[in-house]
Length: 135
Image (cartoon, rainbow, N blue to C red; front, side, top):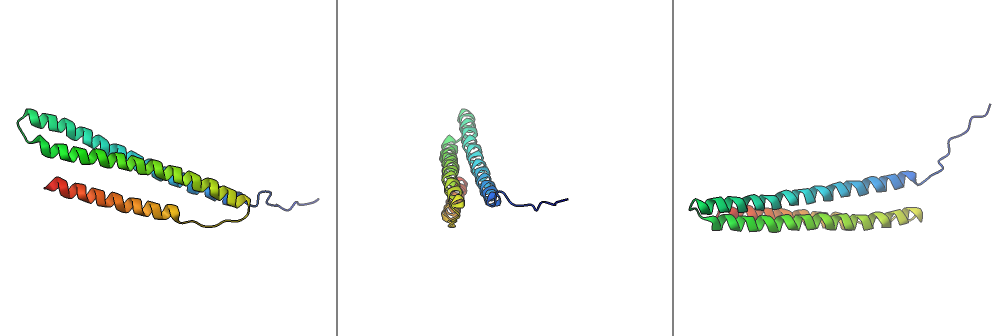
């Protein structure tokens, strides 16, 4: 009786699956950033309602309005970053698929650098937001 040797009919299958896992990880990251942006923007809506209640009670609604404006801008910016990351990663995914099929893979760190820059910008914005809201 013959024993067939297992041959890999799809020699690049692992590379394709790894590329897909990486793509899905970046998509999850972009969804998380967009979700966080949505929460931050909704915090601005909460602050707007709080401002109206404060104004009705005779408080200082102008401080709350400034915080609300920062929250709205920051939230929209985060949503934009999430969309940008998803688009860039899709383009990178397509490019990597093409390279795998051609058996020529060239590593690119552009998305990694963009993500690092985005996180630094987000951290600076939140630091400014916190500093300004304490004044």
